[in-house]
Length: 81
Image 1 (cartoon, one colour):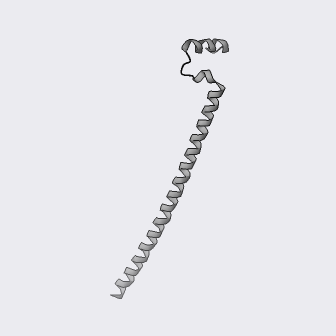
Image 2 (cartoon, one colour):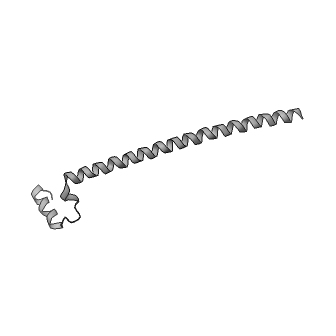
Image 3 (cartoon, helix red, strand yellow):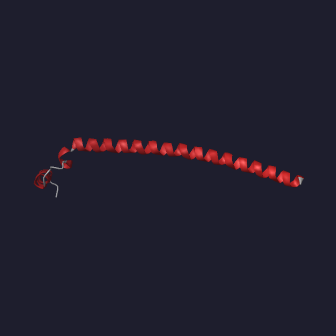
């Protein structure tokens, strides 16, 4: 009977330790997920800013209303095949 109680206490301690380990891992996952989401937002912001800069630098290259003829004219002026 005493051996069973000791085994039960040991298993209970192990269970409590595993629960604590799980809590720590879940906290770590939550923190890493937040860091990843922040990095993703920062990357998207940076990409959008670079795209804006490209559009400002080359406004006619990205215009929807920019006709095929105008593109060909620009290419010939710039010597682009």
